[in-house]
Length: 96
Image (cartoon, rainbow, N blue to C red; front, side):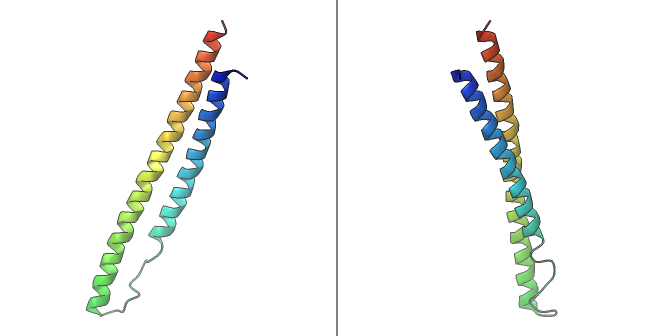
């Protein structure tokens, strides 16, 4: 196997792993967003309401970070596939 063909396979594997990671991050984000959907700290309780609002803000921030990580993984996957294509093209050109 040529060195370029080997590198192409490595980039394709990297793309596959990044795509899997993006899917897992999407699932984690969905589960995080669904963790606290109502105030369990007590209706009419001022401290409970403040706690719930703070917890919702924290969950939203975490979900946004997971979304950004998912976007980054998707970008890595696409970029890795492009690298694999470029390597394949270079390999084909070098064999001419």
